[in-house]
Image (cartoon, rainbow, N blue to C red; front, side, top):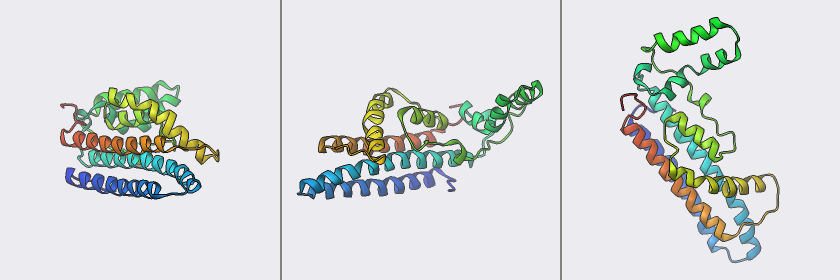
Length: 216
């Protein structure tokens, strides 16, 4: 993945979300056309893991794309917000946390205080982890990593993420014969599409407004 400009970022996000929306819309159409109850019940169960897959997939993919975009702007640490400084120094921070040597801790302090002209450097694939279980807490951490505010609108989504989408997906994926009614499906289908569109917009705004910079 190489995202060098805002245009490339927007094109990437547009294409990814478009494919996901088309597949989920197709699934819904097939489901609503189904007449036999036992077939509809089977399809309803099958759609939940797919809804979750696109929920997790797009959040991860778009976050990686944005981190790659920021990386390729080659900004120095002095011009970046703290979350990106933390990504650059992530390895040193982890090492210092595992060590009891004052020398190691001092070296970390030196890096933070005296290397402000260092260019941002990290591997996006090492810092975005959905844990194959994208709960609201995991989402909050990912959003903090990329510098997007987990605001009240996202907090309101937490119960639906944790107690409906994630819970239903886990039960079905682990072989439990739970039933899914059409009302729940419609609710989660709408939620996933709207939430991914919202996340896409926030990523695009962060790039356009250069929210990764400390001066913004």
